[in-house]
Length: 244
Image (cartoon, rainbow, N blue to C red):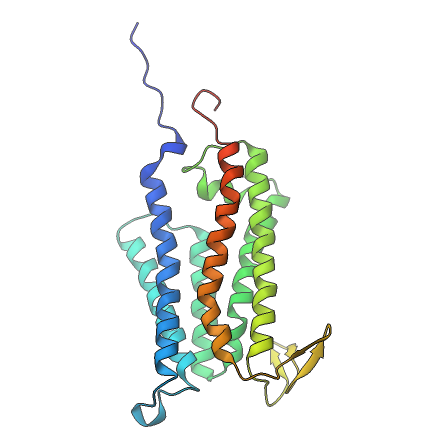
């Protein structure tokens, strides 16, 4: 009898893993572009004041949007897989960023990461309520894990995205300068005018927008570290061809 060749294991999907790594660079490079543009433009004054400390964040956001959409377009042109989460996340970043630039309102740029993180958490938790696991559908071609492990990872990442949303709220409220009038977005009160007290902390009293902006790189490091912390759990439950 001829020996049957076993089907390729998802755990050995090197090509798929490379695609995922490429997507990580697709997140990393726009952030680097944002930070470099922001830190250069806030130290110069060019084009009759169009580029200066106050407008640097708008230019940096524009660079972020261009690089992110450029990567997404490259994936589509090359007919590489693009996840729904990436599409919706890019739409949120592009939409809120563009609104902030056009209206010259920094608040839209500050809250953009919060909305993005909450959306990604919703993309995980809402399908779980109906027995669907988005995290499994995104990475099942890379890892072969039992359903309970996929569910655990999905919950962990969903809670992580919520924590990152809270972290962004703390950062921009703590370090961005206070607003001249109460901030209301879509009819929802977001922040009062000037400085204010909340949970024993004073927000809006600092003029250190650069701390929030530069922490975008720190946030990327936090994401990579959290992923690394989940690697032992993933490897522990990784199934072989025979177990699958």
